[in-house]
Length: 456
Image 1: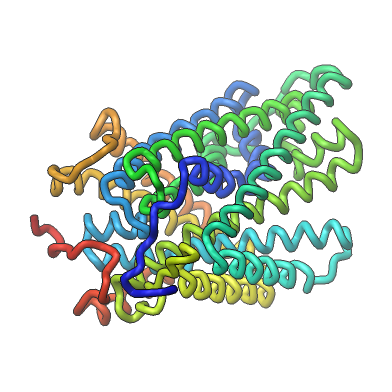
Image 2: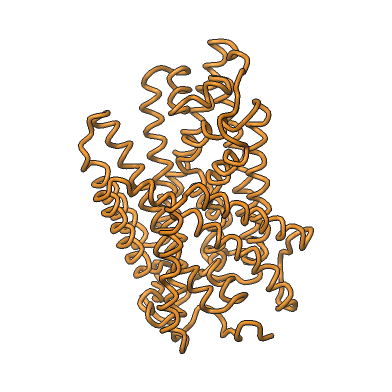
């Protein structure tokens, strides 16, 4: 049954939330980023400290999101927070950006990654050019169909994928320990960083990216008071521990010099620890990691689309919630269609993967920066709103998070170059739409009626 008055029900346990966040964050980055981080590190200790720092910075941001999610539980997540703090136009640009750039671009990137590795397993270096986009399209269609069938089906798949993903990381860790035990310690490092610590930290935080998606599940936790903070704190603790174990294994098996020079560090570790077949196992692990992240990204992305449909008449079709399946079907279908379009774009240009990576990052950090600022604004503007969880060391914690987000915004624009303009242009393309649609809220708005910006 679908209805304009149906709303998300509290059906998720904290364990469900943790599995979704761990599955979303533990993407393919841990198989690709360590060599880039090692290139900017001066020693084993600095290499590992960068990963610890990534976990700490992510936790600082998570505390800010936990307060907002507990005080303003909504399927709209960041969209809902920004709408309350800055007004309808800013909130809409957030949801529009997720629909057209961040979530759909991420889904297409992850689907292409599955296609690339499927081609390498089936054909090696001679894979036909149609294989990767064809597999990517199949991934988008199948995962979209699975999630349209219902939240429980999507969550069950997430449990399976996250379990396989964690097992793959533990296999790499075990192989690293075996390699160190059989071949002795790697030679002492004579490594000279080829890139700065700042660039290395960019890749660390990119590997941790995705924890903020817990905000889009806040209205569906059974524990409305502590579901978000428990999900984020436990999820990030598990992720940081797994990242540390995996990178320690890389160092034990290869040493910092070899990690920095490797083009496929996990495959090199598996090859040294268990043999040539280990490289195939790593390829399967990367595919599972990409599928896990894509599935979780779909689940959270559809919820911001649903919230936008409840508030903006022109997107009203997205605001239907199917109560029996606990899912916004139309929001999933539009998200899948746009992701398929981006897969087609990548297939035509042959540079779609790189372009999408470049243009998603700046928009992503703009939204995180604005969300950190929204905490400061809402604390001041709405002091009487019940806050089951309050961020510690306020206002230092949100100010520190905003500073990191601003730095990452600058760094991502510098890294993406002209590619950043494409994502920002798509984001700003939403302005004419909201100007036409701002005259009245959609019936059954997912958010409370809001005062004008700056009005108490």
